[in-house]
Image 1: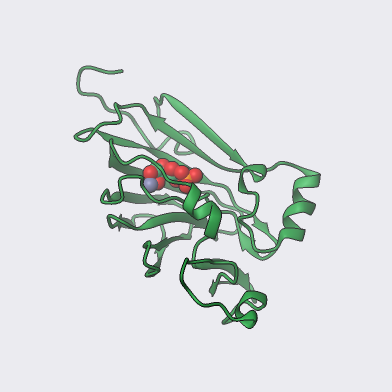
Image 2: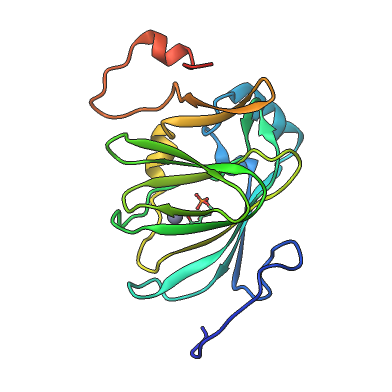
Length: 207
Ligand code: S6P
Ligand code: ZN
């Protein structure tokens, strides 16, 4: 761990940081149950456990006062009509925010609160996105054949809660519809205490 001020370059090659401490690779098999089209997911997985996204992290102590940061690269592609995306998570310490700066590609940040409020914000080069405390977040790459590259920074004590999203999904999905990205309701999204109709469970809305 560094004990003097440090810097690194982001722009070359392929936006991989000039120095980093950790390289996380997430493949299709890590996204079981997250894509709407389970048949397309299983077919794709049977052919190849494709690399969906990578994270390059600069290691810092996971304590308040420190800032954890690095680069996230979501590769292009789709499972059925749904674009490649990150798992998405709440921060374990809910009241911690995060900043994303998009360097390359086109996509969206899908966000929601535990109460079910949602937002889907575009990402494109030069765009800074402030993810508010309490908002779960997932990045989605809608680029045709191009990586979605973002720089992220968040408080050292945030932690990651993946379980909530794994269990209920995000309220909104980003899919390709008539060649364009479209935001639809996730028919499998679940919130305790909410009433569900059979129609809602079987049919995506706004499609
Ligand atoms: C961490 C931050 C990013 C994500 C990365 C991968 O708080 O939001 O570093 O970890 O984009 O996404 P995920 O959902 O697999 O952690
Ligand atoms: Zn985060």
